[in-house]
Length: 340
Image (tube, rainbow, N blue to C red; front, side, top):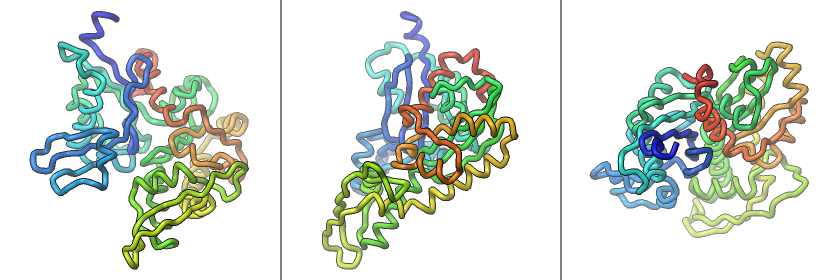
């Protein structure tokens, strides 16, 4: 691979609503927020990833921070292309004399329309990809956690990302039944913001709501190892004076209850469509939880009690989809039938 690596480069990309993860040579080389900062006057890219996230909500008029993906799909074509270029540039900075030929595998939501699929493919090609392959997120997640996707037995994946919750039953190298609902990390963040506004009369931004979710986020009101209350500072909506409010995990669980109930309904909907033989496999093996949403405290317990099937959070759920995309890239000849 030595000399040829200068001419050919292979990347696996989990293009997520919240975070973009890129794998190169079986190693995670980029794991940064899916956000860019753009100069409004010139259209020039100022920052991408972490530096752009630090600017979010703090920019002057001439700088705009953009999250190119919404609900798992590309909402801003130009920003998505610039973000991909910027992320790829982080890998290649100072390493190549010649521009390498790029082969990219990108994962997409299972509920994507043809227009949305075309947008991802076009963005990847405009960002420099010569060979672009797409793989559905639940299939990538299954590969990433070590499931034999070609086996004649059913496996159920629930992947809760930033923009979508992907629910799928996989068997014989294909998705037998699936549902993609646009209720995931971003909706949880908005729920927390709305709760703080209505319950505590305090205005908070996306970043603060995200911090609340990470520090005291919970799906149930009775945890065995509860986290300490998290203090939030912000302006009082009535007086605009600064206030500090402690928020507990029970409050977060209450604020997220309606959205999690919708995910439960979607899971039950997929189970209704599942053929009996595969349903039996799912009940025996349990359901695998992946994605950032799987890190919500007590979510596996809540789903297990509601649906009467064991749910288990996989190891490193945040990177399961990215690792699966990397496996598909590495064995592209074997998994070509999984791709579009």
